[in-house]
Image (cartoon, rainbow, N blue to C red; front, top):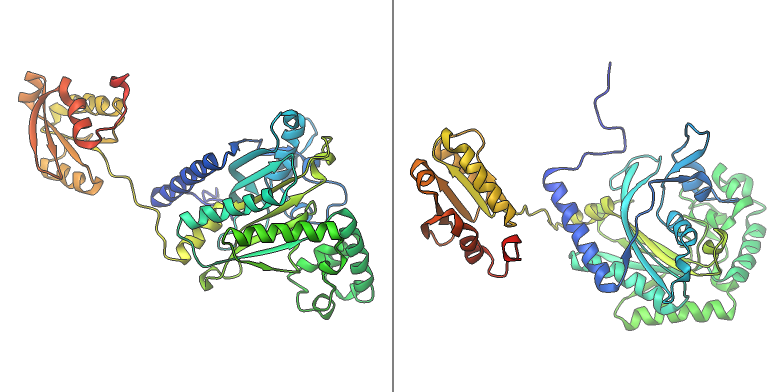
Length: 432
């Protein structure tokens, strides 16, 4: 028997929920415009090696990717995260040759991960992300974090804290990795299978394990700050100082390593402290990467970015009781006084829409009373009424719902009157 239901971990979005998405996406685009970030769109699938890089220890790569072989026997993977494909594009299209660096990008689109679906965590989830590539500065790190905080602040989300850490430069990470291998060596056999793999690939990832979080070896593990060289310490101090001077309170989280292997120096998460969020409390997170551009064959350009799940953001809004789903009311509703007037009503609606006004009408010739109930439900600001006499004289009756003013106009005067009533600054085609 056919299964006509959405696959597990996916969802349909419509109605008031879709309105929330539109509000978020518009705010994202407006905010990124203000910050000077350009939109970039990369493919939803890439060659598998874009994501499955050498000796990668992350769960995303090892357990969560949707990988398939196409008809040309090529291994392709649905995008699990936004950074790798963007860096591939940055190198392939030689965007690093731009005379003004850094290059600043943002993206909004679906990502695909095979994982256990939870509140705010879907197998198809949508991610807003930013990446700044080509220069390395504590000011850039602070700006990226501030952009994300600016977005959630404009939405009214308040129950959050900013967690930040540093993984240091390559030399600092190498020293820390050696210390962790020595520390975990006596007890690695007691850890979960994933941690035993991580021990060989990247022991820093053991610190992010949820299964063994309470194991004595994890609790007593050395902290990275003891292994940072002076350059790494100075860089991290500058980032935290700039954030603090910008009014952002930060909490240094020594065990924060993030979920992907390519990070260096600054890593961060902004998490909700609202109890309704449960275990899925991270609203957005990211970090700096010093070697990823070079890995893809580009120059030695550093970058930093974050990813913010749209579904997770909607859960955070609900947790704080913030409703952004107010449906846009109709500007105009066309009421036809009889079935024989439907085609004329249709033409009037087309005229209003061409003028840029959100217009509804009755398509089936319902009663006058039933149509006015729809006027109320749609929140229409102006009603147009067309009957037999109006058609004969090429007129239309227009009524302003707010003021109750009612006029009979020629159809040639209609758009001008709508402009006068609804938006004196309204720009539409007839004005060009």
